[in-house]
Length: 114
Image 1: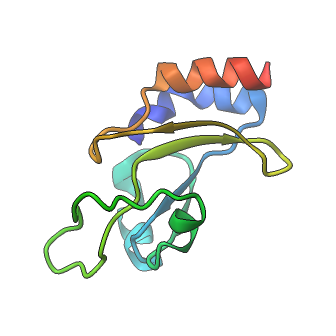
Image 2 (image 1 turned 30 degrees about the vertical axis):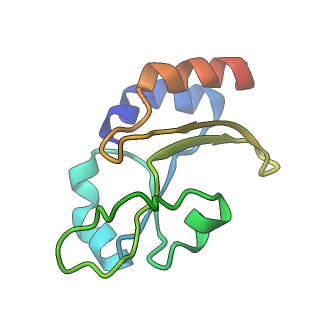
């Protein structure tokens, strides 16, 4: 996630806002926000409501830390959504530890927003 900050100038130029969704509770997000190094709105989805709305629940294996009762976590996914809420592009990772490469996101922004 932190690598997306490499695209800050490109986001700003296009008026793109970065929003992240995680299963972390709001308190955890506030306390650990600085670790991500990303200027983004970070939203809490502990019950996976947003995750399930997009069909992004990882059912393959449990990836939460020990003691976390979450049954499954979201598949790491990057979406480009226009101002009307229409999903223009989606990049889903098969590896829960990998996120979209910034260059892939930049090329998608160029294709959909330029």
